[in-house]
Length: 247
Image (cartoon, rainbow, N blue to C red; front, top):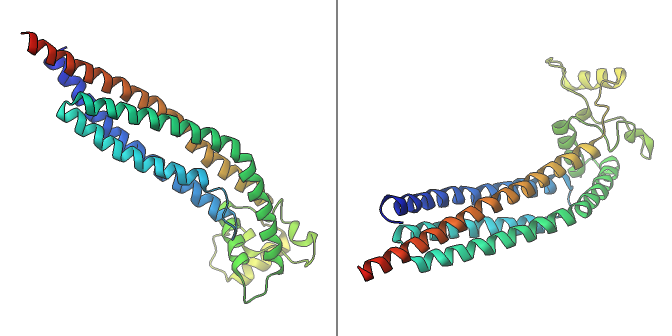
């Protein structure tokens, strides 16, 4: 395999490593988004960040390995290409391990998140005016996800202290009336969101985690293709070198 054939594989491997570098950035971004969602929905308690932190580390490792692979392909060094292929195998094993761990731990993380949501909702109802941290937390969730309470607006009056649903449970009516009038109208006509936030939060977190796992699996196939390219190019370079020696 000489001339254009080997050059084609060489440039293809360089392009692959550029894509591989982008994959590393995507993994880091997906893990950060997933970690941010869990942190944002868990109230004041951090939970379930371990697999995302490992994925971020893997993403950084992928970027470094991709740069190493580009250098090896450009220099046409079989030794560097074999090392690059070895790194890819290690990355695949790490990604599969993290993917399995994330899938196994997901129910536990979502269960903990569910408990923390319920705990923070109780604190949101009983918090003092000077400590409105939990109120701001629930106002943000209810406004962003268009939901109300844990399982519905009835949660606000279901236990002590019995209070009316928060104004963040009310959809924007598109008018420029004052918030007091909007709230009064929303409560009197019960126009607030009927769906609870628990299922929406768990569904959002589950979707984010599933996206991370699917991305990891797809990248494993891409990395397997990179291993084939690296070994192919390394073999071609060695074969070409032997041909020159016997010529």
